[in-house]
Length: 171
Image (tube, rainbow, N blue to C red):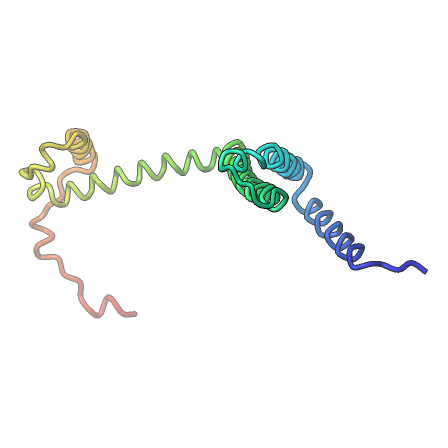
């Protein structure tokens, strides 16, 4: 009969977890994950004695090496995970193109909002120092003239007498 020690149980549980994690993440993400783990371990192992020599630590060398190995491993692991996430996010064609288009749409939306804000308060804004000293104010002004020409003049006298009957608001 086969008897499992506590180590065997923990080993097989972790083996199953890592296997299932790899299954759900896919091949390419697991390759990146493997590179992150190996690189973090190699860098931590290579640099574990550097702080000991730099700080002249003479107490328990094994404890100091273990501490700095774990510290460097955590630092490099987190750093490499962040780098690979940025790289995989930036170069994923679906999300990258969608994000770039969303970025430009956000810029256009803000610019249109700024023009509408200017058009609604131009009499108040036009004489202010912060407006006249602004670098972008001429562009907003010219764009507002362009949009004003496209939209046309809004007859303000018709808006003064504009009223909605309360009975029309409720069905």
